Amino acid sequence: MRISAEKVSWSVAGTQVVREVGADIASGETVALLGPNGSGKSSLLRCLAGLRTPEAGTVRYDGESVRGWSARRTARHVAFVAQDPGADSDLRVSDVVGLGRTPFRDRWRGPDATDRAAVADALERVGLTALAGRPWKALSGGERQRAHIARALAQQPYALLLDEPTNHLDVKHRLELMELLAGSGRTVLIALHDLSLAARYCDRLLLLHHGRLIASGAPAAVLTAERLAEVFEVDAELTTDQLGHPAVAYRGPLGTLPPVPRSAL
Amino acid sequence: MSADPATTVRGPAGTAHAVLLLLAAGALAVSVAGAVRIGTADVGWSGLARVLGGRLGLDVRPLAPLVDSLVWDLRLPRVLMAALVGASLAVCGTVLQAVTRNALADPYLLGVSSGASAGAVTVLVLGIGASTLGVTGGALAGALLSFGLLLLLLRRTGLDSVRIVLTGVVVGQLFTALTSLILMASADADTTRAVTHWLLGSMAPARWNTVVVCAIVTPLGLLVAWLCSNALDGLAFGSDTATSLGIGVRHTRTLLLVVTAALTAVAVATVGAIGFVGLIVPHGVRFLVGPLHRLLLPYAALAGAVFLVWTDALARIAFAPREVPVGVITALLGVPLFLLVLRKRGEL
Image (cartoon, rainbow over all chains, first blue to last red; front, side, top):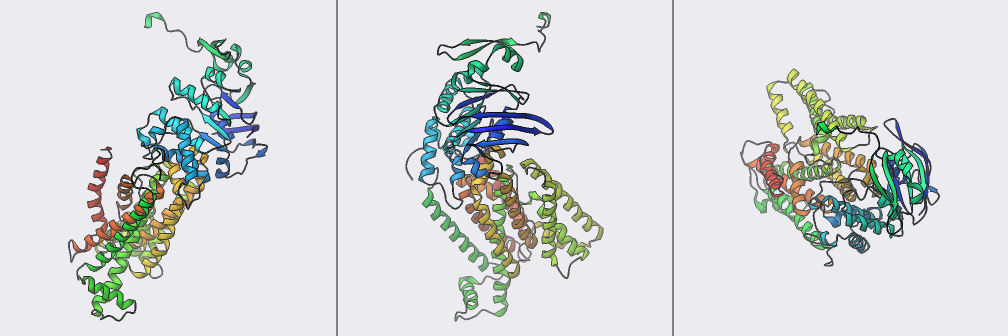
């Protein structure tokens, strides 16, 4: 499913955090949404996931405007994974993943065979099958994150939108998750902080700065030393990893903090 | 159900739950019959059968008219009321704990009971509407007024959990203050005593006309809440995640607030604010059957009904002929039960 934003703007408490963003994510593409803290990544992601109605501009799924869509209709197209959806819940892992079936379920009936199969398949994909019966409270941060991704997969959406899905994961699970998403065949949009991870696994990168989309394109085209200096205020060197993907090596932050005098140590 | 680890459930499976729920319903029926039988005049099972048989037009030897009237006009509506109110309060507590994501939520969180108290006191003490509304009508009017005020204060917000709790507490405090003001300014000792009895909650005022109202409102409310089971599960993870699951969060929260307010208002209007049922029954039942609302709500309704039927029976007979407000008994039994559940869950 193609997701497009046309001049999308969104404000929080009178401050415009997303400014006239226009973007197109093609069907089946894996795209990373990059930008420093407060650049509007999460807000734009929520507008594109149909969780917020933009104050101006239009979000389209396969060319059709989603304005006025019901939550249920949106949920049958797009799954969203929030950044820290922690809950002090007694639900078991398989029940949480089963929540992903909500948009397809009839109010009068319990989960049927299709629902159970979707849950089992999703748990398998994120490697949590063994923890299916665990109470949610007993999971680690990384396990919860993977369970939420399983929940999104159980929703069997055309597109997956994820906000920082890797922040609690260790290196192995980080790589596994990115491979899972990139190989899912679905349209995937991920807000990420890890630039090298984005460059390694994503077809395209979108770079946000102060709510504006300032660059979009292949990783090597978007990630340049000048842009990283301007947007992220870091002194970085762009190299190429053994597989030919751009990789970022940081020398340090740019002129924000004065060096600590030796006498103070 | 297969043995696949992803699909096996802790505890009984679907059909087992159907059987268990039927058993619980049977336990409720037995409780109601038992509670109607006992009291200051124990009529025995045969006496109970003769009263019911006579009313159904069967050819049975009737009891003495006074005893027959005691059982049919006072005790039976009272016990049925206890069952309906118990189910209502338990379900309201369960729903509000999920909607506000607050383990301490109970049916009175929205301030509806304080509104009902203020309405009842207005009628009892000031005599406003005494001829047209009666105490029950006054309490209902007060409850609806306070809930109207709550919705008015919440109307331009996202109905998020903290705001519901805070606004409910504020509205409740306002009406509690009004109640105290009216009592202190105008009431004599006898009226104050009557009001106190009502404030603590007592099944004594239950009659057939109030039971009929409850018997219509309660099942409807329970059904609507049960149909929102999936949404109640999803709300545990916050608005954004719930919305992304296809739950119309604002609509669902509004609907559930209206349903719980209506159930609480109808219950409180007749029997006062009976405490603890709506707080402990949800926790106890959640501990036993797990947090999935699809199962939790029907079990909570049945457990709440059985619990209040027996606590009310205890309130009637424990200090006979003097009657203790049932709210006192529910609190006395509720506190140790609540502590036990917390201890078992490792939260104390």
